[in-house]
Image (cartoon, rainbow, N blue to C red):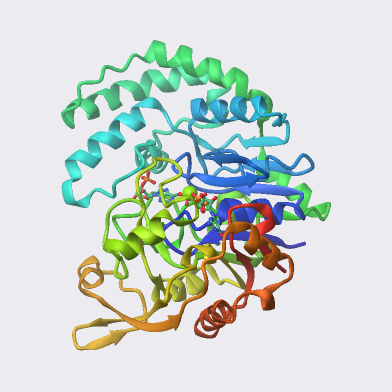
Amino acid sequence: MSATVVVGCQFGDEGKGKVIDFLAANADVVVRFQGGANAGHTVQVGDALYAFHLLPSGVLRKRTMNVIGNGVVVDPAQLLKEIDETRARGHPVTNLRISDRAHIVMPYHKVLDGLEEKLKGGLGAGTTLRGIGPAFEDKVGRFGIRMCDLIDPELLRAKLQAVVPIKQRLIEAYGGHERLDADALFAEHEAYGKRLAPFVIDTSAWLDSALKRRKRLLFEGAQGTHLCIDHGIYPFGTSSDCVAGAAAVGAGIGPQHLTDLIGVAKAFTSRVGAGPFPTELDGPMAEHLRERGGGEYGTTTRRPRRVGWLDLVMLRMAVRVNGLTRLAVTKLDVLGGLDRIRVCVGYRHDGGVLKEFPASMRVLSEAKPVYREFKGWPDLPEPEWIGIAGRGRRALPESTQRYVAFIESQLHVPVRILSVGRSRAATMGR
Ligand code: GDP
Ligand code: IMO
Ligand code: MG
């Protein structure tokens, strides 16, 4: 019995949704285990484009069950909107289960997210304003409302009566003017609970029995290693653990099942939000990377993504903290049409070269990348790449193969999935 975990190696938006959808063809269950509606996972099927925030990316595959684990914070209004929109596009979404232990993102969390960002000034991460930080703060602070409370009107009312006045005081202390109304919040959320109740179960117990029945589990990470609350750039990341080990905690299964650990990395680096970014580019090269392949704009917030060269210092750390056993490299097509391509192999700092990603944001912002330069490859439009993808890795331009081989040699992990376009067909993998 073994399970596959897919995590991001960088700052999120590596193409996890696409890789999950590709792997879901051979999975029985797809499980989200952390994060919330801050995630935006794009899946393209034919000409149809889907952007999932809370629904696991296996939801379009009828025979695949999709689980939202206890480690996810669920915004019920957003989840219901996604269910409705996906149904309107012809998918029944009956293949969904939600953990009774998952915490709820409440409207006051979004208010507090905005207020905290403003007050933090230069320490703000440029959040998605989806209420993620305050919802995880409430989980740890034990103010949280869980899915099992949402579907139990009596408990929900009691909890809201206790928590809402506290949140009101906090909003006022932060200089906010929003008025919370516990009765209105109760009425709104009781209705959400009624609609979501049929999906809510003890997903840990359900996953345990799925493992015993030898079902193939696929864990869908959100965000990325360098946004992880423990291992990411702090305080410019997100509020949950985004590394592979979190899959066991966030789904309620034993860690011995997690044996196939896939890291997804873009062939370059991008991020939305604030914080130091050693290989960041500006000018025409940045425009090239941003505008190619459908554009680099946040799936959740539509903000333009900051872009830069591939950073192997970041990836080396991702290999270590996730224990990666294979890699998926996406967006190789986006680098097409460039004469020279650079890859960062270390950081110059204080007269020496750092090989490991530093904890200190001061060191990181002072670090200067050490680059290796590579010959580029031709600009191939997606249909031509698709032909190549079907024929396997050796059909890629030689310089692309060299680039991928260099990544493998530096990280000591095989690249087993390559993506050269948005569509399912533009993927090659083992
Ligand atoms: P996720 O958050 O990791 O699932 O990634 P997002 O979906 O937020 O962002 C990845 C974006 O890149 C989406 O628009 C995908 O459709 C697109 N994408 C994924 N793989 C490729 C690829 O190989 N080439 C190109 N051009 N686009 C890709
Ligand atoms: P997926 O799953 C990219 C970033 C935000 C911000 C920081 C904190 O699509 O890869 P938050 O709202 O989580 O408190 O914001 O993290 N961020 C993401 N960036 N992809 C994501 O998810 C992200 N989720 C959060 O931009 O800098
Ligand atoms: Mg995304």
